[in-house]
Length: 287
Picture (tube, one colour):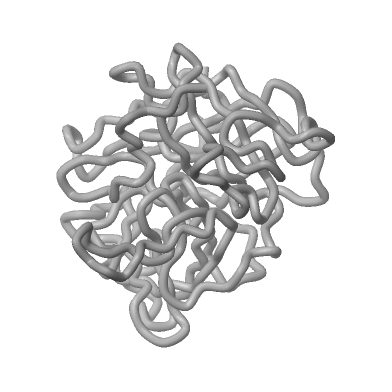
């Protein structure tokens, strides 16, 4: 399979444009707590790799991710493949351009189809609007698996409005979220002698609430910070990965990773809230 000459998955989401992003930065740990969090590879209408994101299985068929990950505009995403291995791309060989252990990014390794790997030819978009409708960029997407994958647990959707009272009734310094995803854990300038780090494994880190009511959030987005001791954030390619309310053992998904404002992943992170009734209704019936 031919590789795209421009891989959107390694471009950080900024305030100027949204594109798929990857992985966890800062004080992260390997994530074995959330077996339903997947690496998702997207292909265009010709079957060529275009980008990769993260996502969460909500049941045996339905994976929640970001809307810009499932965006079909400009010959974007037309199909996908989901990898549930914690080390989904850890053995990627840049010369062979694939991981011989898992088959990432082109195939499901022998014995993993239907258990840890699955294709999808049914993608949905909540109406992703990039920044035309900012701050409501409608950044939610769904990937429907071609065949079911049965797990012992799946991601849990929130009650509508669960985040509404955070700004007024809780101390932001006491509100903890957990982010999970695959990819870049340290990003540097192109001219830097220090390499960019991409482990391609599922990592997680705790973040703290900044706000849900600023001009950049306005009830549609969640702003968190991953700076400081024992905290971590998101970086290029974490798009669509879950933001759990609570610590490492939480399965309650309240948002999906959407965009950031620092090209080196050193700043605050923004995720698209799914605890709004209209988003929950769409997830239940995306037709």
